[in-house]
Image 1 (tube, rainbow, N blue to C red):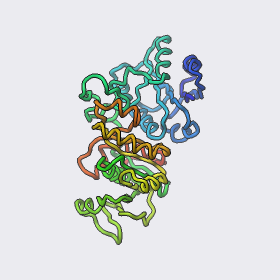
Image 2: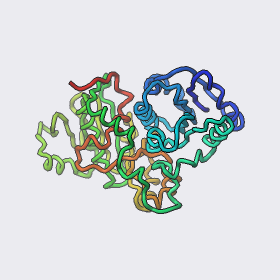
Image 3: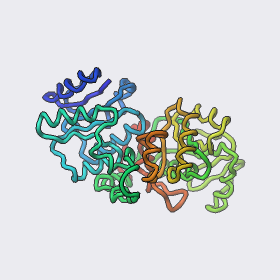
Image 4: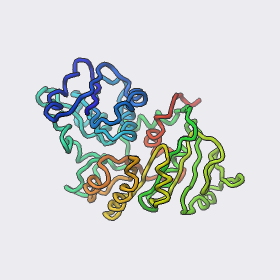
Length: 361
């Protein structure tokens, strides 16, 4: 099924391509706040295969539009298609879409060309035009092995704007004890670092969260010594965050970040009981991609969000075919408590639970 948000005058734009591919269209016409639609309505259409959005039907500005799409990608598996004939290949919105992995973009002003592009987006491989420049679905098997300028660690203009605006945001949550489970495909792939950054992000933006190490790695004691954590009975505290080792929390929080270490039978069973599922893995060497794919098989039933650093171009095609075509790409951080570098990713994970956003006083 195709879920299609458009203006009234564009409601029938997908009919021909959908008919040729025997796809049902669920049309919704008018003007939409995309972020509100994703939070309030999208669950009704979670099984859709394609999510097609006409940019001119969305009320948010470009930076908010990108942020909403990134949140969508973290929660749903549908292929995102954006229609906006006034875009060029080099404007900030196009680059922002490509950067977050949206590579099915219809830009042609001519109707025949537009219909051809729509058909291309609905094909098995999707539109190939932007994929060589996209981190998430790039065909890394051809060309040089050096990453393009787009993925050198610098944000696009749209992302920079979003990050700047987000620094002063304060969130209100009504949720209680939401369990966010994170597990690594193998050891030493950044699982604990990401978990610590996430718990610190929540705390620094108005929520309450704790970290609990439900693994046998023994990292928490070393981290506590490094950062001079305080000790309260049988748990640690640091900068108004509680840290537990091998036990469940004793208090209530908006979120409990549960670090299960790497994929093992007992860890997988408990991990699946989480409310939100994240899996972190490496993708720089061929054996890492193979291990990632094997680990993912053990938890695929819960459809986890796949986290990885920029895939090695040499093995990108292998990663796309065996792990996923649309991972959430995270960035290396300088410190384990860094909550700013991957702030957009952190916000996307908890966004469904944000009931109010205000500016920090």
